[in-house]
Image 1: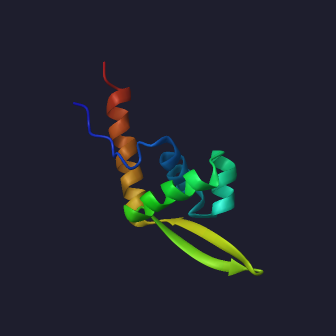
Image 2: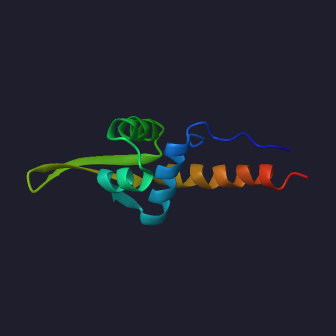
Length: 95
């Protein structure tokens, strides 16, 4: 009856990052930090976990001589998020 929830997405911060990226497709690290109220260190660790799982792509570049990190959701990440939401609904509709 209850479906397993993806342990990668079941972290509050990782779920927040993926939820933001679903709606904007790509975002700068500073945007994600501001929207999630996470520390830079914690956000960096969670982004790396999402990258390692293949859920996001991380692009590091320079903009006006300053480092810039951009995160993009991957098709794998979109699928994982949709599956997570579908599985979560089994918990919400249980009676």
